[in-house]
Length: 68
Image 1 (cartoon, rainbow, N blue to C red):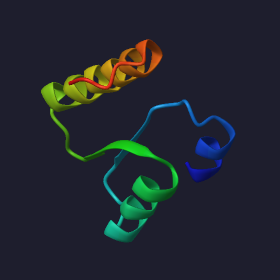
Image 2 (spheres, rainbow, N blue to C red; image 1 turned 180 degrees about the vertical axis):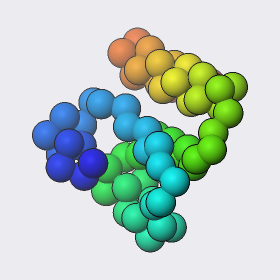
Image 3 (cartoon, rainbow, N blue to C red; image 1 turned 90 degrees about the vertical axis):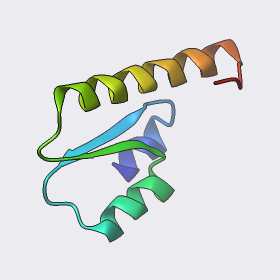
């Protein structure tokens, strides 16, 4: 995930897992600009909200807006 971020920093990253430890999650937040972490089992509503928030972030960054 860190290597992907270094090569493609504009990509919004979401970590979906049932086995990540807190150290790995924090490292991804810090070094890979992790947008969200969702642990198993996740709800459909949570997954949809994370996707929507990622899309809003892309929209905000493309328009130069710092609102929301």
